[in-house]
Image 1 (cartoon, rainbow, N blue to C red):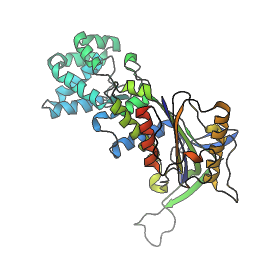
Image 2 (cartoon, rainbow, N blue to C red):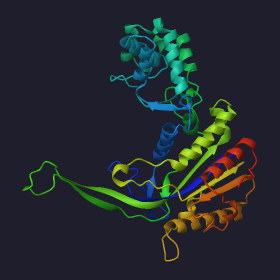
Image 3 (cartoon, one colour):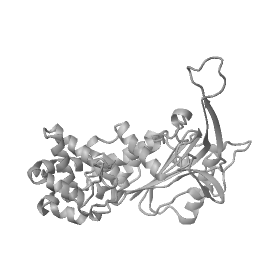
Image 4 (cartoon, one colour):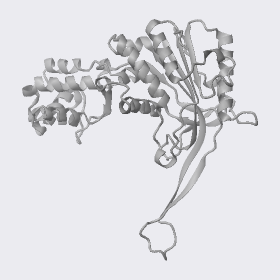
Length: 388
């Protein structure tokens, strides 16, 4: 079973997701330049919503970090261990896993670990403290290649450490997956696919020229003390994501209740998540104008091709209304061509209610909360909810 989430979100002038030059990310689609927000940026925003709004319990969250040494060592210090000794133990434990710690006490690359995994690594360090707490071992691991460093820690201890890496029932880890290049058997296949958000409309870059004045400058001194430009745009974005519910349940250790809770958290976070780029100077806090969810047994449909021809406002409808109409029309064409076999439920929440909708008009619900409740019910039972 799969969940699909489609959204249309019109942002005021902003620079939500920048490239390496500081410009808003963009792409070419349908032969036209479009604004873009990367999938990585969107997933980061969703994970931030999990934490900020308490949508997922702390024990079911994950951390992406290079600072595993300081994090676990800090936990050991709270348990009464000496800080220097704790760092040696953690460095040795990480070496026993076949991972590397570089000179600044950070791992070679970012690790995505569930809170429960961190707790179990800490417990393993406590249980095997005497074995791991040898400075010579720590020094060897710092000098040797990964394979040699891995051999320094006894196999039985390494096995305990590896057993700790089971995903930890972390919702965000189960959704977005992880890759550990040195421990491929501990990789987690992502249950969720997130598309790059692209604008339904064509965009042209715009520039804000700004100046700043020194508050303590003498009154008789003219001129600015800082000048610069910031690139920005304004666009109505089409956002798409899907979740493989079977894979999600598997990643969460078969915990059906946690799977349902994760789906609800994912929906709420996806709808409210907004990237943070340049928000202090532009405040583009614009929620979606349309949220459209589908629960289906098989098959996945991105509706991005509704916008191969850029939407443009006219005297009869604005950009958002035109984008909604284009999405609705494309859904009608897709269902006419491929049918709706296997679709268990379709729900739409929109600012204008059923206004501007034709093919999806009968699927409109009162609000986002009702949409989420219907999706969770369908996920739980495998049948569409009768709630409206």
